Every structure is written in structure tokens, then in C-alpha cells.
Length: 358
Image (cartoon, rainbow, N blue to C red):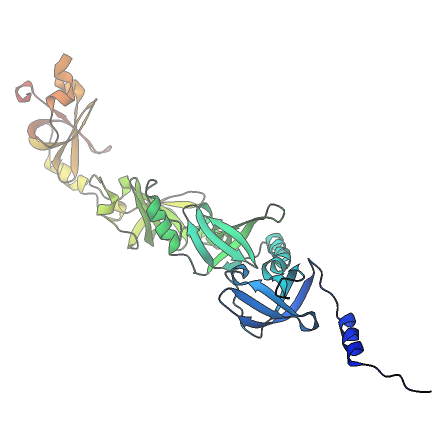
């Protein structure tokens, strides 16, 4: 019996028939042939060559020629004969599985923000874009600035772009494509241990993270502390920025421990000069002082570097004579008489005779 002859066309047809046809949505594996400015080409073997737009490759993913990658088929045949593939879609399927597993386990993971806005940091993890809100940053990284200084908030956040941050996944919703991270949650276990080692009265060191109108925020080994403006110095403080700067290391005394914050005092690490200077005065003394504040209930007068005394409105007489704003001018110097000294409450009362009125 004669042996059948197989032609080249028949062999090629058989090879084509044996090659599995791609279908949209299918996940395939291939090798990167080339990386170009606008495209990535992937060798799919007998299934041809796949095309991936370069912009579609994840921000945080590093790939090189020769790497094996997994992609999802978007279109089986473009005009150039190649298949349109998506690395991001295939990565997302695997990424969401990883995200849910990390969320359920409460595991701490490392991320690198790739951009920032005034609300927080933009993060990509396992091919999925997520968000790290400002409110979920640790005390070390939280941008403590004046509420109106939005530009400085963004500047502070931009310094965190590209840096490794330890976070936990706070919320993940695949259907809504929502992924939220928290740095605060990642450090809270260690903070609990540090809080246990601290007591009211301890002296601690910390780095100033923010200077605002009402005080100074300090990072004490990852724990946020606040030095209220009244605890910065024994003298009256108008601007906390005159005393400390962001990035400066300071020492302070713990005066209270709240749930997640320390209340600190800088002034209590030094002797109260009021207690020394008050001994220079006695009831009935005539003193000279500078009017520093005028209020409806009286005027405050600086009679020494550390002592501010009060002339109560009741000492001014009656009627229009009793209006502090009509009697005093800010920063003027006048003579007064010491009416009372209360050392326990750190108060000195002054009287103001009619002969001194305007």
C-alpha cells in the first residue's frame, strides 16, 4: 500500500488548528520581548505577540525584557495582528485576593506612595490603587500646620512620596474599587507598649512636627504630644514659632496622658520666675508697669519680666470712668498701687487712683 504524502500547506494548517485561539477575558502567560516608550510587547508563543500600552503598566511595578508576566486578553486581534493585553487587569484579580487576605489577617505591609494631594497619599499595592488619608498618618508624618495653610500641608505630604511606609489595610471593597490604608493602625501595637512605660512627671525628648497658633506638636518616639501655648514659657507667649521650629528636638515634661496623646510642658522644666520676682513686691507698694492687654473686665499690666498684674474694672470708678478702653492705652506705662498678692493662685491685683486717669 502506497504511503500518503503530506504537503507543507497541510502541516501549517495542522499547526494552526493545534494552536489554541485566544478569547477576550482569558488570562495568558508570556515573556516580555521589548519595552518601548509607549508600548510593551509580549511573546505568547504559538498564540502570537501581545501588545500592552506602556501607560497601563502599574506605577510601582518594575519589569524588564525577558521577564515572564501574566496578562488578561482585552482584544484578540488588533489591526497590526497583535492581541491587546492588560497587565493591570490580570494583576488586579490576583491583587484583590492578596488585599483581602492581608485585611483579614491584619497584617502590616510596606507601600510607597506615588503621588499626593491635600487629602492624603496615593498608593498602589499589588496593582490596585488605594489611598492613605491624612487622618490615618502616624504622629511622625502627620502634617501639623495651621488649618488655613493648605500649601504647606501638600508640601509636607510630597516629602513622603516614594518613601517606604508601614501600613495596615483599613478598608477594601472590590466592587466599589475602594482600598484605604492606615499608618496609624500599623503603629498602634507598639504605641500601646510605649504608653505603658510613660508616667505623668516624666521628662521626654521629641521632635517638633508642627507649630500652630495654640501650641506645638511633638513626636515622642511615635507618640504625639502637644505643648499648649500656655505651657511653652512662663512668660506670656504670643507666637509659639518664636520659641521652637519644625524639626527641632526639645525636652518637655509629661503633665497628662490621654488616650492617644501626651500633654507636655516645656516651662515646667525650669523654675517659675514668678515665685522669685513676687517677693520684690508688697501690698501698698507703688509700682510702674506697661499695659499689655485691655479687656472689658480690666487691664493687664506687666510690672516685671515674669509678672503680669490685673487692674480690675471695679478699681476704675463708675460710669464712663469705668471703661478700661477709655482709661488705658495699649503699651503705655503708668504708676499703680499693689492692692493684693495671692501667691497660691499666682495673682497680683493693682489699684489705679483717679489722679492717674486721663
